Image 1 (cartoon, rainbow, N blue to C red):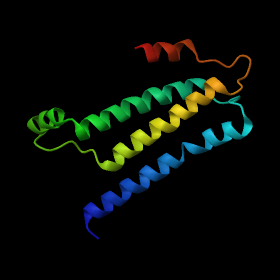
Image 2: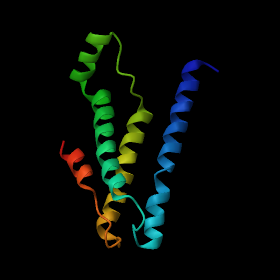
Image 3: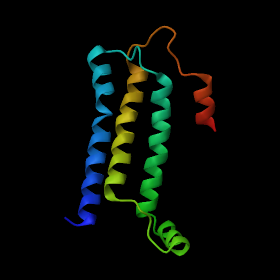
Image 4: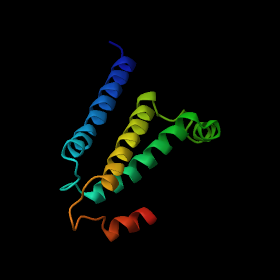
Amino acid sequence: MNLELIIGLCGVIYCALWSFSLYPQVLMNYRRGSVQGMSLDFAVLNVLGFSAYALYTCLLSYDQSLRTSFWEKYHKFPPVELQDVAFAVHGLIIVVVNQWQVYVLERGAKQRVSYITWLICAG
């Protein structure tokens, strides 16, 4: 087996496993009809993080001027593979669904997003 095949296979495996790890919370919320017990800070920060990661991977993969700048500085193309883009975009979709659940499903009476999280998002 050559090294590129092993690297590609590892990339596909990590993409699948990390992607599947996002589903249990969404499914549990749906089945219960509630987000009680779920950290709303985590849901908000997940959207922020996956948005940044999806933007990063998409730009490094598809923006020609950025790829050219990267080449001129490092003398190689950005190390972003198709599975990186797929994971980032798929993950963003799932965490947006999870965030949507926060707004439409039942929450605990005192369950809210903390001020610190809103400050992080505003920053």
